[in-house]
Image 1: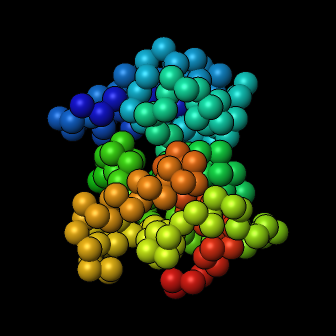
Image 2 (image 1 turned 90 degrees about the vertical axis):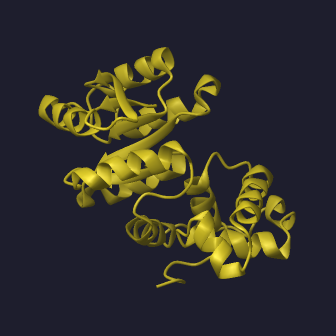
Length: 221
C-alpha cells in the first residue's frame, strides 16, 4: 500500500486529490496539511511513502518544507512530489535541487496523478520525463556549472553512459534496451551511480548531471 500525505492550502484541491487517489486499491491518503509547517510535522509523525507538496503555502513554503523532509534521516524512504503550475518554474528547479522526486502540474489528468504517485513511490523513474527534462535543462542552463567533482571521476565509462540516459529521463528498462543489458544490470548500474554521487534518488542524479556539466541542456531533444 502506498501511503500518501497531501499538502496544499486549498481545501478543494486536497479533496479532489484524495477522491482520485483513494479510488485506487494500492493507495491510501494518510493525512492532509494546509501549510508547509504542518506538512513537515505530519511527515515526521506518519512516515508517508509520498508527499504531494504544493509550492506556495502559508507559514512555510513547499520548497523549505521539502528541504526539511529530505533532511530528516527518519524519512529517507519518503518521496516528495511538487505540485505546481508552469509560471512557478524557478521554484520547480529549486525543489528538485532540494531533493524532490519530481513534479506534477495541478491540472494534471487523474490517471497521470495516480501513475506519478506510483512511479515516485518505487523510485523507478522521473514523473513525466520529457516535461521534467525540459524544465531541468532550462534552469540548469542558467547555473554557472563547475567542473565535475572528484566523485564523478569514480564513475566507470559504462556508469557515465548510464548516467546520461538517466538524465534523459529513461527508465531502467529503456536503458537496458538502449545499451543491450538486462534490466537487473541497468538497475545495478543506477544504484551504484547513486551511491558514488551520494544522490537520494534518480531526480537528484539528473540535477547533479546537469549542474556538473556531464550532460548539457537539450542534448537529447
